[in-house]
Length: 129
Image 1 (cartoon, rainbow, N blue to C red):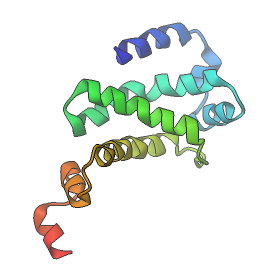
Image 2 (cartoon, helix red, strand yellow):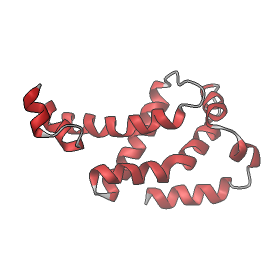
Image 3 (cartoon, one colour):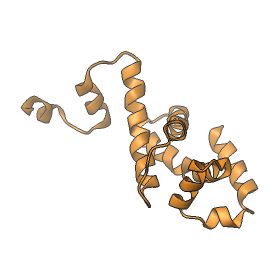
Image 4 (tube, rainbow, N blue to C red):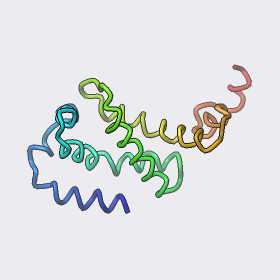
């Protein structure tokens, strides 16, 4: 459902050439200055690809879409200082962290289990630590 909304918004905003041509850093600075349309453009630009990236972790489209929205919401609320040209990297780091936060808030307190979930460590390397 979210993907369809993003596609619809992409068609609607496709006529906004200046926003489409702006780089991520410029759009993010415009968002920080109070321009919601700039943030919407960033969400349109990266929403589908971030959802696909998160699907690789979750293997569930609905959960991946939820975490994509959560990642964008965290950036919107926290308004972090993101270096010039690093918005996409920050976003793609925030997505999996949202998954971790969701797992931990759901009651899983075993950090090793979360690391194993993401495949960041295997069981043998955890035993060596």
